[in-house]
Every structure is written in C-alpha cells, then in structure tokens.
Figure 1 (cartoon, helix red, strand yellow):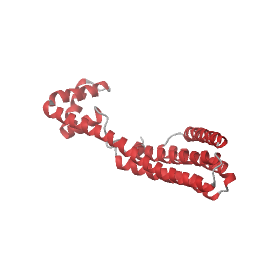
Figure 2: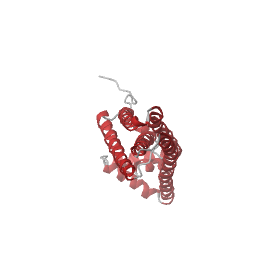
Figure 3: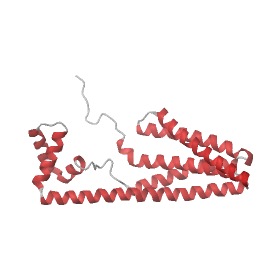
Figure 4: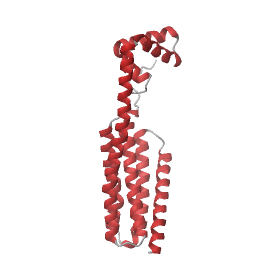
Length: 233
C-alpha cells in the first residue's frame, strides 16, 4: 500500500496575494505605457514628446499602482481587524454561543453532531479566535491582507512592464515606433500571461489570450484617438 506524506502535494494558493498584485502591475505597466506611446506617436508627435509622455506614464503609473494597492489592501486589512476584534469580544462575552456556532459550521460541512461538537471544543481549547477566523470569517494566514507587500509588488512590476515599451520607443526611429511598440507589448503580454499561469498553476493558453486581447484593444483604441486628434490638429 503506498505511503503518502502529509505535505506531499504542492499547493500554490499562498502566492495569491503578491502574485495578483504583481501580475496586475506588470500588465498595467505594459498596456498603459505601450498604449500611451502608441497614442502619442499616432498623433504625429516628435520623438522627444513621445519619450517624455512614456517616461511620465511610467513614473505616475508606478506610484499610482503602489498607492492604489496599498490603500485598497489596507482597507481589507482594516476590515479583517475589525471583524477579528468583534469575534474576540463575542468569544469573551458569549463563549457557549460561539462554541455552538462553530459546531453548527462543522455540521453544515458534513460532520455529525457529536463529532462536530468534539472538533469545535478541541479547536476552541487550542485557539478559539483562530478557529472562528478561519472557519467562520474565512480569514487565514494564507490569504490575509498584506498592504506593503501588495504595494511593492505592484509598483515594482509596473515599472518593469512599462520600461519595455519605453525602451523600444527610445531605440526605434519615429516612423517605426507604433508598430514596434505594439508588437513588443503584445509579445510581452503573452509571456506575462504564460508566466503568471505557470506561477499559479493555471492553464497557460487562457491566460495568454486574456491579456493579449485586452492589450490589443487598448492600444488600438489609443492609436485611433491619437490619429483622430493628430489629423484634426
């Protein structure tokens, strides 16, 4: 009979927090900066104006992404702390009621009444607040909010993603910037989709299609707007 270790399986859910922020940052960096450069170039701007717009987009976007992640994840962390404080007060004021509530949660998940009561009692004796946080509120160490981690991951990866189309714009002549930035950005998005899917253990083709289609739509829209205003001017 085969023997199995309790930790033989390798799960990836612990990466959810930073991976989500990193993928969002890199994707937004490539799409927003690439689209900005393509839009400005389509308006027949000079090389210097295009590069300045791209650089401004990189700096502003990185700061915006980091700040946005920090604020939004901090709000989540505040909510978690408030719920935990409320639960701690309930455990102090009504321990029997909270024990019954925990037992009912386990019964709803499939345990019989006696076993559910035993599990609730044993877990409560070890860490009552931890048991309620995990099984009643859905808060665990794996998915808990980490604002600074999310902000750093998002801001850094945005800068890296935005640097790619900006570097292409620096290296290419004015007449080739639109095509070179578009192709390079879409290739980078495809690579990003594959890497994020691999890191999260998800299907690669779906992730690649998702990011490249939306990236292409964004660049097409900004190119059309740039061409329209360039023609009017």
